[in-house]
Length: 173
Image (tube, rainbow, N blue to C red; front, side, top):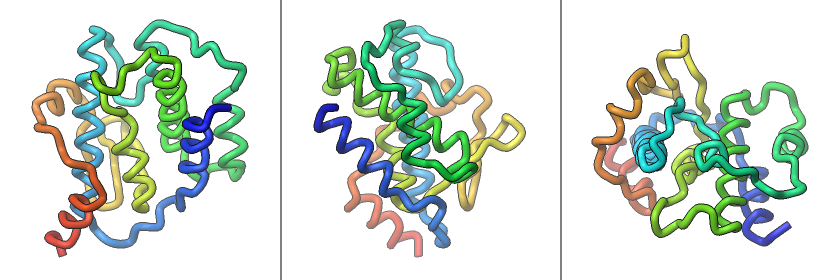
């Protein structure tokens, strides 16, 4: 296993799920940035998908590793239901992205890590769930996911540095 993959696994292993009790402006910024990045990535490959896609499927390639990502996720999160299946899937897709970057199949200069905003959101105490297949709910709000590509492709890029996100949260207080 490579250093980048080990760092990614360590990173998601350290997430404390759903510990945010405070309404944070950064939550909406991070989720919106994920949707924006995902839309741009999918559009560049003319791939139709929901918002939580497999990057390998978009590229129509096999990962080509002996690592079963479902087993990795199960070993990281052995407790049933914690985190929920959506959050586990997002973490698995993040690891998939890391593998593809390491293999040179995704060039980070062309595509910033699509999953980075959601991993940061989780690290900051966030949790997600789908409500009635229509909304992506987070602690204090929801994003409509119908027509998500049309809706979020028009967003300007968001700075997801910790400094900017912390500043946005302070301004929100």
